[in-house]
Amino acid sequence: MKRLFFALILLLNFTAFAQKPCEIDQNITDSLGTFKSTKNNIVFERSFAGNSTNIFFSLTNDNGLLGLEAQILKRSQEFIKATCFDKNSKIYLQLRNGKIVTLLYVGAETCGTLIVGENNTNNRVTTGSFVFVKENFEELRTSPVTFMRVKFAGETLDYPFRTELTSEMDKLKYEPENYFIDYLKCVEN
Image (cartoon, rainbow, N blue to C red; front, side, top):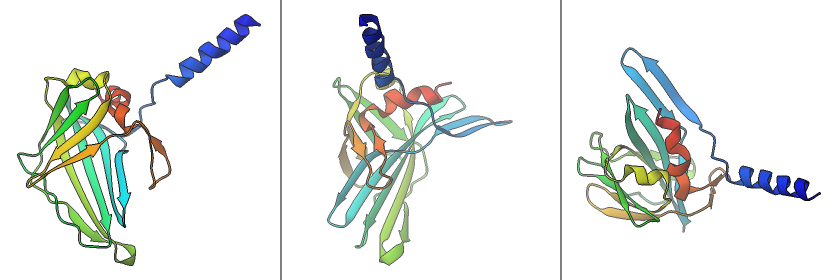
């Protein structure tokens, strides 16, 4: 009986600490090379007084260059001010171990797209491509992200990461702090 109990406890520990499965959105190989990307994952969500902000991440591997696609979706009944990415834009990720990982913007200048939705709701979607700087990249595999700072063209905004997030948008559960720990392995090969 003791062995059965021990085996059950051991099995529960393995399932509790199992890694997340890779959910690949694109996996393309052609004459130009290879491109692989993960599905979008919500890493930040805030909803207050009729305004909401959602941030989605997707990891990419473009011919061996690891990157991050960040998509910021803002909704409001009021006009939404544009936040733009330019050549000086960066994402800073503060890790639980105290280190900072920097990602550099590599796309053309963009201020996103304003779309008017149902009931005259304004939606602004801003998407940016970022690449990792070599210095502390390895730290993302082992240390959770606790805080993100985004340097836009004219301002800097801060976004705290949660350990667990149940999204109002799709009612699914996400673990933003462990995003890189769970999904970097999916695009490294």
